[in-house]
Length: 309
Length: 282
Image (cartoon, rainbow over all chains, first blue to last red; front, side, top):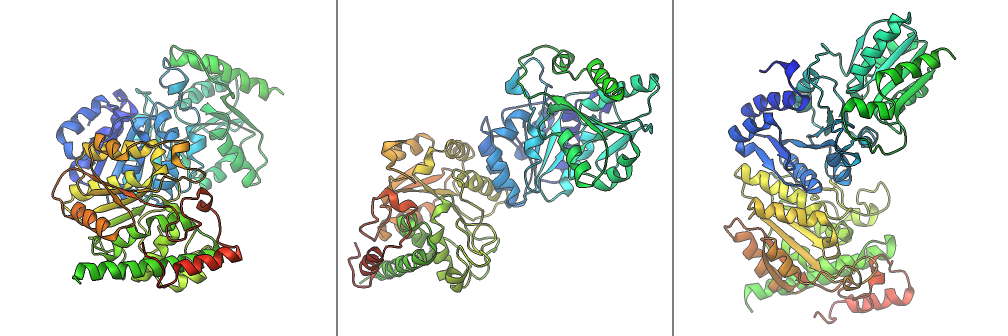
C-alpha cells in the first residue's frame, strides 16, 4: 500500500479496490474514457474486470444496472459533473428503482478542475443525488476516508455516490460512522464537507486564536445522516455554520437546515456556499474560492460579522 | 396440415382472444391499447412459440432468458401474455390493473412476476440488457436477452449508445426487436423524427439486422428462432414492421389511439365485432 498522504482520493480508492477485485471476480470497474495513474495497474492485471465504455454516461449507468442485476459489484468512474447530471434518469430508474449495488465515483468535486470552467464544476451534485431514493451519498475530505469507502461500498447492497476531490497530503484520522469531530469549543460549530473541511479547520484555528470556542465537524456521509451523533452533538452550540463547495441550493447547508427544523432544534445557522451563479473563473482552486467567497479570509469575515451581530 | 401450421393457427387464435381481453380491460381501466396491439404477435412469438426459455411458475429461474419491454407503454399486452402463461393469476388483470393495490401498474415494474425491470421511461432497456448479456458471457451462462423497443423510442440517444456498446463487446446473446409501427405518442414518426432505414442504421452500428412483418407469426418465429440459435458474437436486431392498433380498423394507423380509451359505445360495439371469433384474421 502506498503512503496515503501522497495520494489523491481516487488513487487511494482505486488502490484498495484493486486489492479487493483481485480476490473477487464479480467486482467490475467501468470508466468513460477517463483514466488515472492508479488505474493503469488495474487495467493491466485485471483486464476482464475493467471496461472503458466510452463517453456514453447514460449507457454506462444502464449497463452497470444490468451487470448488477446479474450479481456483479459495479464501480462506475467518471468526472463528477458528467456522471451525475447527464445520466440522472438512468441513476434514478435503472439503479435506484431496483436498488442495485452500483457505486458511482465522481472525480472532481465542484471546483477541483479549477482551470476548466463551469462545464467541469460539479456544483449541484450533492443536491441532486441526495434527492434520489435509497442512494447513499459520501463526500470524503481525505484519501484515507476515500479508501475506507471501498469496503463500505462493497458491504452495501444498494447504490451509492462518492464525491471524490483531488486534495492530497492530509490525513484526518479515524471517522465515526459518517462524521468526525475536531475540537470542543461551543461558540461555533463549523460543519463542512469535502475540501471545505480543510478550510474549516484553518478558519477554526483563526477564530480560536481570537478567543472563540470552535468545533469542526467533517460530514463525509451526507445520506443517510448519522442523526444520532448529530442530535447528541449540535444542541451544545450557540451557532452553526455550514461550509461547502457546492451551490447553496440543496447541499450541506440545506441538509443541516432540514435537520435542525426536523428535530425542532432552536439553533442559529449560517450557510456559506456558492451563490446562485455560474463561475466563469479560471486558475487555481484558491483563486476560485476567492471569487466564490469560500477562501479562509472571506469565511472568517462572514462568521465574525455574524458573531458580532 | 403440418405441426408448424397448426401451431400458427393456434397462435392466431390466442392473439385474437388476447386482443379481445385487452379491449375489455381497456374499456374498464384504460391502458395502452394501440401500442399493445402493435406488438402482440411479437410477444406471443417470443413467449408461446418456444423461442424464449422461461418457467412461469419459477419466474426467477436463474437460467431463464431475459425479456425487457423497453417500450413500457405496451404493458397491457405484456400483462395478458404473462397471465396467460401463469406467471400470475388472470384475476389480477381485472382486479389489480391500474386499480386496487396496483399490483399491475400503468407501466411494468420489477415486482411483477416475469418482469425483469421497471420500464416506462424510454431508452433504458437496451443498455440494461447489454449489461445483463455481458454478465452472462463473463459467467459462461447460456441465456439470451431480448429487448422490445418502439420505433419512436429509437430517437433516444441512449439506444444508440447501447447499440455501439453491444457491438463493441460482441454480445451475440443480445437480441433487439423494434416495433416499427411508424407512430409515436402524438404523430407519425416521419412527421417529427423520420427514422429513415432502421435496417441500414442498425447494420451500420454493427448488428446483424433483419426485417419482417411483425404480425406474421411464421416470419417472426423463423427469425427469432434463428437469432436465438446463432453461435456468434454479433448482436441481432429484428425490425418488425407493424400496424399500431392492429386488429381494430378504426384504431389502426391513427396516432390518437396511443392514449385514447375505448369508451364510446359505438366504438366498443365495433371493436367487439371485429375481434370476435370468425372475423378476418389477416
